[in-house]
Amino acid sequence: MKKFYSVAKLASVAFAICFSLFSTQVFGQCGPIVENFNTTGGSTAGFAGDFGFGSAGGGNNFNGFLLKSNVTARTIYTINTPTYQLSNVDNAIGFGFELTGRSAVATATISVFYRSTITGTIQQVSIATIVPAYSPNGLAIICQTVATSSLPGFPTGGAYRLRIELTANQGNGGSNDDIIFDNFRTITLGISPASLPVTFVSFDVTKVSSGVQLNWKTAGEENVNRYEVERSSDGQSFSSIATVAPSKSNAYSYLDLSAGGTAYYRIKDVDNDGKFKFSNVARIVNGKSFVVLNAFPQPAMSQLTLQHSLIKSTATLTLSTADGRVVSTMRPTTGSMQTQVDMSKLQAGLYVIRFNDGDGNIETMKVIKQ
Image (cartoon, rainbow, N blue to C red):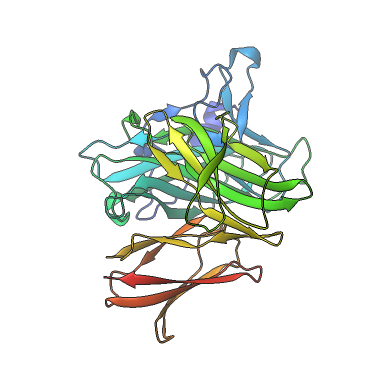
């Protein structure tokens, strides 16, 4: 824990405002500190993303924290937590953390990942966007509690992990522009013995002079055996063309030197226990790439998961009836690659999803509500 403040000053801000979906809470209600990064031997303790390990105590690591240097204003920096496990009697997810550093954070957006009992797949749900309240000595304390009943299909005693997106309010990319994340808290029992599958944060393909360049980023690499690069000429029958070993870097690339005119790609994550998961499907035609829309389950009973390209702030999603009547319009979460569409109140029948990525690319697909 980096000491930018004295014990006396810390006491003076112990009752700083903490923002919650449901109520204002003191920091202790978020649970005990489960990771202070002080005894991790210089590692990030299973936390992944844009932050690296930092220490104010030299080589002993007794004053550790997560550090992002060379911060620039209005840029989003991401932290992905390890997988945690609720007990069977817990009915809320509680967490907290501290922010310091010379670059203030404008907003902290938190999403939770878990395996839904409704769809049987990993769901991402945005649970809060928080404006940190910094004290005069540069400390911001964030405390949050979210009822699991507000998370569709969250299982009793479920495993989950969090993604924390911090948007810098200031910074010019200099060596003195930094954000420090420390003292993560949770009310959970600890790291889950049954890890969630890896999360694909992004996946894109680009035509280059020598072939097709594939790039993907992941979060939650806790049980990964390998990544398989798969290619198809029709978007239906895929075959493996390469294997990439996990490196804990969370960022991967592969250059396909034998690609044809039109090709479809996806990444297959294979875990050590044999379970596997696919990324979104990307298509490249005449040098231009697209992410192929995919929706499941079909037919949908209540919740529909739509896989799409990486969301920018201008993206929109529209759900219409077969005769063109718009029933809902939404803006998917910035930085996500899938969106939950609530169809529970719709009548059974055929619907059309229209996805606009904000860059002039529009795709539509038909879905069925049962």
